[in-house]
Length: 310
Ligand SMILES: N[C@@H](CCC(=O)N[C@@H](CS)C(=O)NCC(=O)O)C(=O)O
Image (cartoon, rainbow, N blue to C red; front, side):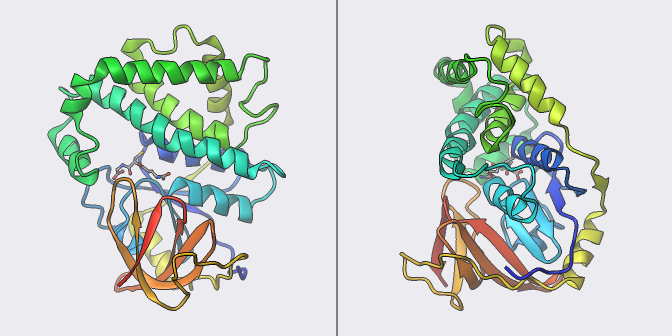
């Protein structure tokens, strides 16, 4: 990628999003100066959609006119731009990515099931409905409520995996210092600890609790609040980066230059349309023009995202 003028990362997020907590801590870990835009937790998100072209999940990172969707893509971009204090220390990137993906999908969704199912009767109607629609019925609080014995058994089973991963006294999951997996595992457990405290899920998990305290101590750094409209103006004034990726490849027959849509394959399946600018085994980059922000690049991970011709 060619180096554009230096912009501080802007995180579009809201306080109690676990995937946002994953990214806030990664920013704190890397000691990166960053700016914070608070977005709504349900649709509509009028100051986010002009940047992403339709992707509405939380969080989204903006750097100038480059927009990074999904915490896995954000992590790789932070590592590329700020390689000191590595999230993926040499030679271990693949293994850490596999473990992180398990926490981002399986562990996250079963903890969502426990947290939202336990709170089903007190969750505001707009949030309940929004999440049901957003996930095509996958996030169904009444079903989660009815399925609590199973969901709690799954979370408990997996909490013991994490408890025992720390048995040799290591302070972090991969050893002496935090790596990408710590942030991925911590985020859903942070949600569980804060929002299902009455269930006392960590009472017999002393090593998990001590590790969580170490992770919380990483902190978020010192973000500066930014007005959403100012973030839109930054994108409009900036030019999207020229992107060249190593290992360009297209097993599915797509080539840079063609018109495509990009869609998450799990939930929040809002298609984003644009012209394919670059792709690799790890990333999809499309260029789109928006009346509010002008030309922007929107970056997605390759894993978990579907490309389609328009
Ligand atoms: N794979 C995505 C998942 C993000 C995700 O599911 N975020 C939740 C909040 S923690 C979300 O988007 N909820 C709906 C919303 O915020 O509109 C990532 O890693 O960033």
